[in-house]
Image 1 (cartoon, rainbow, N blue to C red):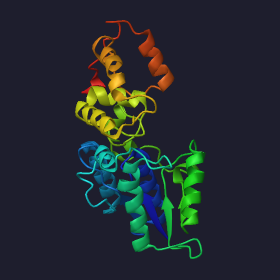
Image 2 (cartoon, rainbow, N blue to C red; image 1 turned 30 degrees about the horizontal axis):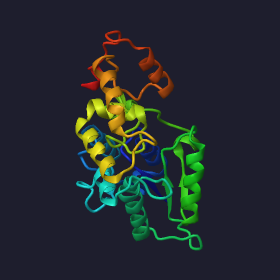
Image 3 (cartoon, helix red, strand yellow; image 1 turned 90 degrees about the horizontal axis):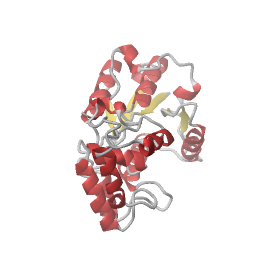
Image 4 (cartoon, rainbow, N blue to C red; image 1 turned 180 degrees about the vertical axis):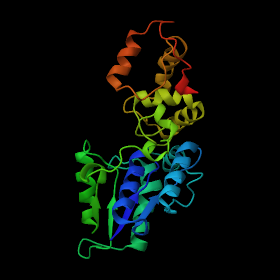
Amino acid sequence: MIAVVCYSGGHSSALVGIEAVRKFGRENVILLNHDISAKVEHSDIKRFKREIAEYLGIEITYANAPDFEEMTPLAISRKKSAFSIGNGQCFCTYYLKTQPFEKWLKAHFPASLNTPCNDIVILYGFDISEPTRIQRRSAVLGMQGYKTDFPLALWNRTISSTQEIGIKPPSTYKIWKHANCGACLKGGKQHWYCVYCLRPDLWLEAKEAEEEIGHSIIKGLYLEELEPQFREMRDEKGICPSEKDNPARFWARVEKALPGEMNLFPCECAT
């Protein structure tokens, strides 16, 4: 049995890789990654992916979109003149991850519902708090003839942080919830405030994309409309850009803040 780890570069997928090697042995584990353009994937995420792979003694297996270095999420959206497919999935997710993943599986471990593949099990980093994602992924891949497993939710864990093996998680976790692209098209208002403060280049590109496509990234709110509020939050209220607070608490802080009262910007995590 070969364990194929969906190795995103985030902390959870790294833990899955470690658990898989401890259970199956490194010779039976594949770390499958879809590399993302350095324009939007932070260099420290790439550092983290390399260090975990080196610790495990496994080469990363890449299943990349052919022009991934240039085709950032916003570039893909502009090319397709839409941010999402009809089912709500972002074009970037499908083009940069789902499609290359399916092509790789078909090329190396072909399967179907009638002829399932018993050679591999596909491992994801979903934890016990994500039962809907677990059920959905199990069902989708099961219909394609593949087994799935979820070590962080279902196994007896042997590790809870990569700090235990001396590897620091990506520095992006100081600000962002996930090790996703900068300017994630799935992000909400709080996420895009962080983009406004920390990635003005991507903020400008996103505004241009909305104008070209004629649709907003955040449902019902164009970034152009949010800019005056975000400018006040940053320049007058000194609100630190962070996804670490839950949204209700974050926006409550914003609502209560008075000019000069919260002198938190630029804060340490934003440098």
